[in-house]
Image 1 (cartoon, rainbow, N blue to C red):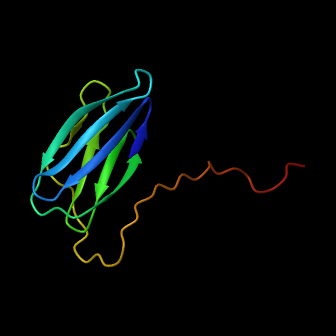
Image 2: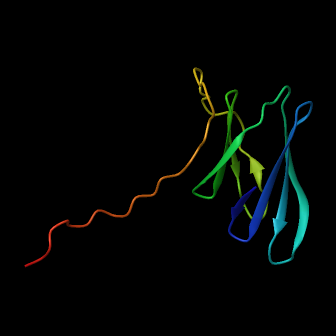
Length: 106
């Protein structure tokens, strides 16, 4: 599950049919089916939020989900995957503060 603004997105993996996405509206307190992405033999994946887009990553693929309030959808085409990935993928976003002077003003 990933939270974006007033919505929570749940990504369900179905190994035979692909990914289905449900959207929870925190204001209306209701779930609705959002969209699906048809893929065969899909492995579990991790999600990371970056600039109002959700990136779904596993060893096979990397896809971008546009978390638009009106019509959330998967972006067409896969992004470059990790061809030599090994171990567990754990996507994260690192946000550093703006650089300020490290010296004290005199």
